[in-house]
Image (cartoon, rainbow, N blue to C red; front, side, top):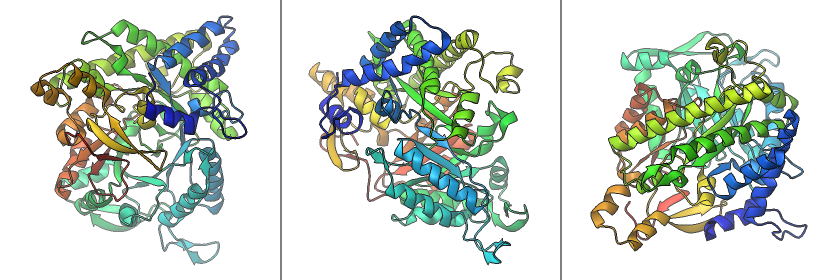
Length: 546
């Protein structure tokens, strides 16, 4: 059932319009359009029953059991035809490379995708530029160029573009990078993450100095106390919610394609690490739809995982790519990112508090099941369609495990998708039982939790309501991290997850969260202290448990 807020979003962003801007498509029509377009890929494999697959795809989406990422819902079956959400573009230390990336970024944003970059290869501010005998302006100055390009490009008339800027912790300009967004007018179209290395963490734990290295000539520029850099990251996160931390060596230990190079960056929400020029299409299973009488319906979930993997693999074939190199890399590796939404609502339906060992156990069991079944589904597709072209040399070849897709699982934030599906976002706790949300950049709406209303109507006890409706700011950082860890253990790519902190949180607490996240083996972590920004998409209001 599509509610009023979801319909508003669909009408503004997703549903077809005529030449006068009038909506001429229903939500059901949108799902049929998407299913029909994606199922065309079945013809490539001589599947004469592609119409049945179209119907299966349609039912899965129309029942709100699974939704693909926004560009697929927006663009499938339309002239633009670009269906992927996540892109990573390389930036080498030359003007040609930088401005080629700016141009391609504009094209990707126009089509509804988001872009990630590592600026770590750019020489530091003040370094020599031999060709002109001038001095370099540094990574942050070039990030401003990308930011301005994003500012003037509307994504297909629907939303602003989003970028992820990554800088290695050993870059000489790391302090400028870490502190730049303390000015709320800076890099407004960027999320920032520091690529933290194992070497840096060793120096941090040993309270030692850490070398900052010029990427142009690999020479040591200076040494700094590792603890001071980590404190600076925590201070900036306290004041502005950024940067987050990417544990880049942890990410590369899990890189399924080490023979193709190292991963240096992720998509804008940091859940999808990618090689240069890779793209990835994501999709999320709505877990709240798979609880029957307080228990998980494993068989129905299994069928949905298999169907979703096939759907996402088909997208790779029918997608229209913004650049030939992106098409080559994407089809060579065939990465897909199947994730979940509605985890908090699933727990509520099972009468399990979010911050409990029982919830941690459910998370682990659930994601292990989805991971296993996604691999079985990918192997079955490999038998039917062949392994992904870069399979030889991959970790899957070393394990003698034929796979159609180099990765199958990712956990995205599902901000808009979860609103459409009427459920909780990603693996987050519910934000509150009633809160305000800014949607489409300029519309403030009140979100009432549907399960809270439902259980209130059943006159559940106050004790039970307080026990199971655990809201974001009531969950301790320890439990945010434990739930993230339980999921991350069974995911190929990364996890988009925010540790929400009350306004009263201290800088030292944020530093501790970053350190614990590293010790937990997480690939990244984001912290947001309430009211650390003037503009917040989510805020408590009305009837609230905040």
